[in-house]
Length: 50
Image (cartoon, rainbow, N blue to C red; front, top):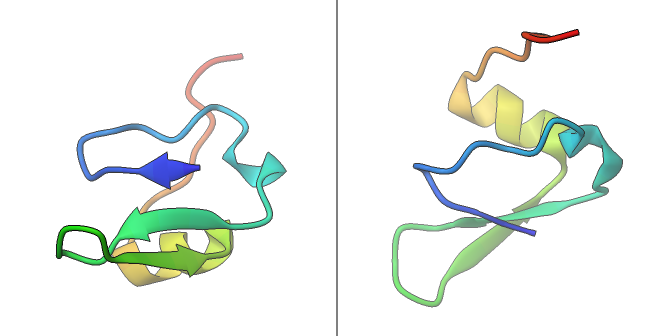
């Protein structure tokens, strides 16, 4: 799964073992487990709908 800065992760992002995110250069991606992406980006994970 590829994630861009302006995209939201699917509701069930935990279902993926790893995610590929842009490394800031065209054609360069970094593969991370979802927990590392949350930690490195400082994201807040919260349930917003029931």
